[in-house]
Image (cartoon, rainbow, N blue to C red; front, side, top):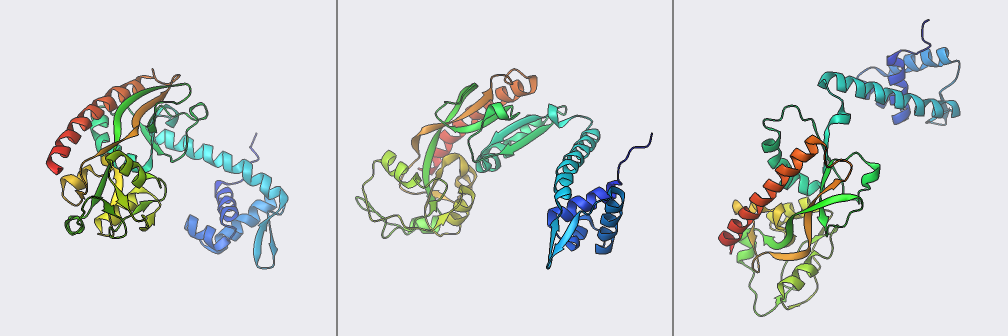
Length: 308
């Protein structure tokens, strides 16, 4: 018996129009004409025997029946999309190795090293996700995460990779022209602040044991990536985790100011949900990332000696 199923074109047109609440933008999204969207919506309404959109003044709004319909067909379209991706891959994303990390850690430390992991492992599909929030491992299918903290995550196996160390960095020309005596005078020193970690300067000052006066009033940036970019552009000095700037220090785009790295109370950890830690691909990643951490600790020792 023939299924009572609208055409895929009509469903896609409806979903796009409902998402944008605008036929013109839906047409741009699907690379068709605005009249094409209108025609597909009309055909769908005729098939269903129900009105899907109404106009209130110049605004387009969904009818009550359309709201329910949208929820259900969106789920179906997502399933069709996922099945198609799995078919192309020849493997379900449900079997992919899902790794999670903070966005800056992922882009600056993990991603440049991943080729080394994937080389020779063509059977592994890697799904790298990022987050700036706490992870509820019971509610996700994350196989492993690299997290900053003190090793306390519920129902997980946590293994310390390396301590967090903070450094004050700036562009060479800027650092060259900053002169300090017995204490740091922040009324004279251009500083940059990280809005996502506003305590970094105070954490570094406590760890370095340096006297200071004046207020830290420099420009604030939402995350470390922009903070590092600002430091390279000579806007001021920034406090950042050492692992974020290893390349810039090696290439002399940035230099250390006021001495070497200062350890914090935190470390970076490999965190794995207990129920997923023995999955073969997760176990392979665990062995590899611990080896990368050992190499990083050696590289940092070399970097420290050449930058002091």
